[in-house]
Length: 332
Image 1 (tube, rainbow, N blue to C red):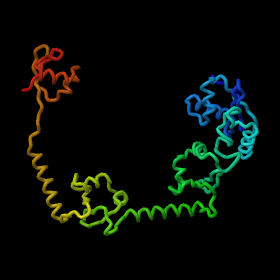
Image 2: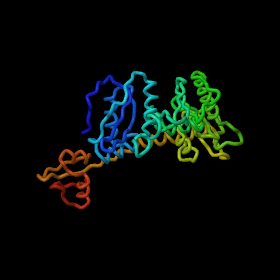
Image 3: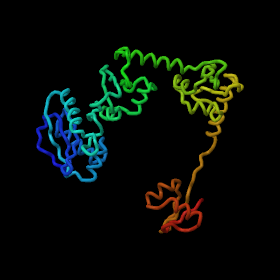
């Protein structure tokens, strides 16, 4: 088992995870507790999910008994802890494979010690200079791929976070950015109406008989709280309607609204009438027990479950005219 030193849980600062044989170090910092951070490292390493692949491979190869934690410096100043951690990483060059187990020349939170490759702005408007976007997202519970799309301009934001290659000259304040998001949502709703006569993909009729010429079925369904797959089935003719909405291909003949529902509702009434007049089919069985007692049953599955019998074997015994565990079964 790894060594858990008796450390005061209130002590914070910069630490190193040292491989006792080779002397390689992983340098990190904590603003909570040395003991708590060490336990988190051990847990991640045991489950083979540590963010440093170099440290993970060394742990898997040499075993947990070969690693100890060393306290390098203590401080209550969080800004000093972060800056000093990066200085020690640069001093010891622990990002180099033959010297240490850090991922690269930046601290565990993603803040660079050698350069600034990305800029992130949090929902409160604070600016973060980062080099490893993946590590930065990992430690803040953000989606790395969503942040990349935000950086490239495909997304406006991700959970209120903005990401850029370089800091823009004009930055919106948090309140201005919220207004910008609301305006983007309004524009999306306007686009969802998709009413363009002469360039429509299909014709839609609402429950009141109003006609629409729609180009974007997905946005149209989102605007009117409809299911896109159901509306496509209605358009192709597999369904008569969806929530009393109808869809037809461009150029197709659209039946009169009142005549359609009169004919459709008449078919529904006729169907229910025929279903009510049809007598339910009763599947009865005549069963003879090993003692010779004869009984008539309708639920074969429940009968078999109560007597530890197999329904499939009982049905096969009926077809083959043979016994199943001494029971005989036949149709009336």
